[in-house]
Length: 449
Image (cartoon, rainbow, N blue to C red):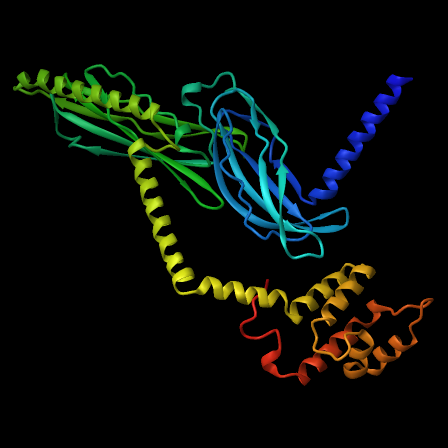
């Protein structure tokens, strides 16, 4: 019997705690994904939304999000409205693309955030803690029959090449450089596989340093990769450079697509000066060694896809810009007294007749009779009346319908406020016409709080 009672108490405490949490929070989070299962390299669109029944008094900061085993790209934040249990909520939705780079399942992490939003019927923002839920994403390995070293998921790919050297006049010992450029839509540059250069009899190949770039707009992402190879022709005769085929998996069409650079046939002429061949090979081999070392360093020292040097440059420029903006704002707001002026105007606005009348209308729109009556008298207290009562206000500025309803109101049949909102608006306009325009709270300097 004692054990049963303890369990009941624990359950009651848990229900009370959960109910209290939902009652105090008033902020709802939502995390949605466009698909639950993807291949390696296939993006998942994750939308993280924070919603409130009032509004946000400060911007919503979703912070930096890191998903283990994936590249995460932030796209944009959009304002949104949502109807929850018959009530309208305003919200902000942040949109991310998550690109898995191996076949381990992903977990989009839970986010701990702090937002600022007022209670219903109030205007002053309060800090509230919000915790979003995590989402699991299943990542499938590269399908059987496909080369994992050439696997690429993209919406589309463009392919082109360029040459340095005269292909129509090639002699033994000559070096021709070939560059291949790929523009890939719907992925990041880190997921574009390198070109695999074929071994060709009579030719030594020396890959050059590749360059990658990712471009992002608010709605789309694309990447490019440029890489090259230098061909050292060592034997005379006719040599065919094989075609280069680029394949990619299109998730929208659910099939493999490809583009091809056609093969090249080159006639290599004899060269009487073969003594320079070994020196050219040594030079190219030394360059390849340097490129391999630099590439290894870059792979271990990449920060957000940038080299350490480039990242440090961006950080320096960003900090300099922030410092300049800070000093400029400080000079404008403090040295010129603009901050104090703004604070004074805001305080006046928050105590203005116009502001309290808006609060009254806001309560009326919610059909909350008690709160509406309280808001009405708070507004009347801001009017310059001999008697701060609804009856005095109506008798001096209201129409006959409003006066009659107030006079006929009794305890058994109280005044029907919601039926006379338009009459009160008209009476307010009459009141504003009778006072000095300079004293009207809504002036050219009025600031919407």
